[in-house]
Length: 410
Image (cartoon, rainbow, N blue to C red):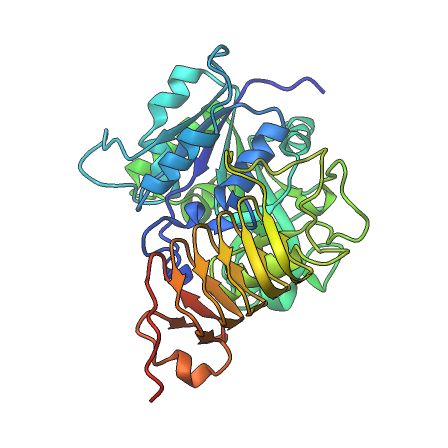
């Protein structure tokens, strides 16, 4: 199917407070993920792989690292003016306020819609780990002659209360919208599951512009709470079933419709573990639908001697005689002799010195762990570290840039 011109807005301004301390110095979309990526790379890769190349990335809180990441790694084409990933901080064109909500973020940049003159506008979040062929959602939108299409995914009814729940008829037309209901409505053809909004939308351009203006007049600034429920009354808002999305190169062992909100430390940690193993729930090795990583100009990983099981080892890593199990080791990490790392995420430019023992630990960037440190081995001792954050889930986090010192024996 021929596709009309589409413009994308990616909402990348989230604070990510529940992901602290990883978000103490950066926004949630800028948090490193996997061996080579940041969270934002997943949605950007989905758009580029879907041949959608006109992308505005709307940022807000602690955005400098995200701005630098995009500047260095997401230059699409200096020759084709419609191919761009442009970072847009709050312009305060409508007043002194920052973005007041998801819809207000787009409204404050409504001039970009007028400048680009698209027929469709996609509004997506930047906080999730998933693959999606957005062209299939576009096809659904055009086939239904929809004004708005909302990406939705089925979840068990007992989990749906944490989301915006969508009620549809047999043709997937949205007939109702429940914001985090106590008793969610089930799917029409499956009473055990409910449709929940993914926060990803495709709008006809004129419909979006008019809805944003009406919302501003009513002091309504959020797509999920205000704009979408009001448009449902027009009768031309549809739910696209994300479970039907087919990704080229996907493996049979992967979880169908894999989508994770990595907004908490346990969810962030578990999503990393989902990528490991011979048959992972989310397979990063897919040449037909790659996740595009940051460029790297350093050397390959160097492993002197050791035991490595079921782990990602990124470029520039130097490993001495160490044991690494079920872990993700990002770029330029040095792991010295007699170190044991199990179920861990160690981020860029960190050093794990001789004799360390780490279990279920996230080490943020630019850390040096002193000789003989033991983290995650004795939880009560972890709480005594001024530099160690202990999540209620039992995962220990060393915030960015801390310098841990060897504790005295007493």
